[in-house]
Length: 301
Image 1 (cartoon, helix red, strand yellow):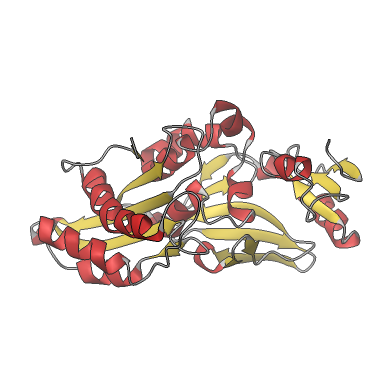
Image 2 (cartoon, rainbow, N blue to C red):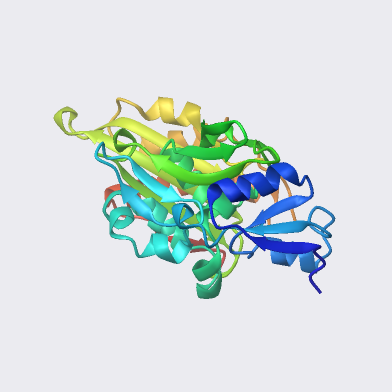
């Protein structure tokens, strides 16, 4: 049923990197919620591989806030752990929403945020949220440690800039990228739970209290609006320095179309996704700021 060659449980980051460097046939497995499905379906990218388990590496799990306010999330931290963590709840509310929207309880208990990012899927619920927080990815490899902005990590559909011998170890969010911001995440799916997003929209907004509530900064990110998760930068720039009005939100929604590349698929038509691209940012901004409109997960029916 699961056609893999071998399984090794690494006990440290160094050991995992060493195995991956020495064996080009090796692939990392953590929660396994993606890889086991691909193995069962005989996906050629994983069949016959030597799997390297990383769930018993203490440094890869957990959430901590540093003295400078930087929040670090281990790549092997599960969605359930993120949902229930006080630090995340206090500072990264939209990440809680995204984690809570992933699959069902069993998937959230075993699936990890690192796997959600490293598999390269544009539909990954946490990806868009991390885009809005300008998260940095900490990657260990044979040449040491490097940090990559999550916005530069995706190379194409199902592809990321992670080389053989490298391991995604942690996700870092700086204080200046969450302090003073309000955020939200809306997942549009056919079903209310245990479904892949037809479109996902994450926003992060900061108002200037001395300017009658004008938008000081706005970040908008989408999943399934292109081949990779993406930021709607032109819409973000449009809103800066302006007060929030229904007219402005409609303009923001229209402007989001310039940064996206919706397509037809068996899940939804291109025109339908474009309508979601117009509407969901407006709803998410209202939700983030506590303005009327929007409930966390949208549905077709």
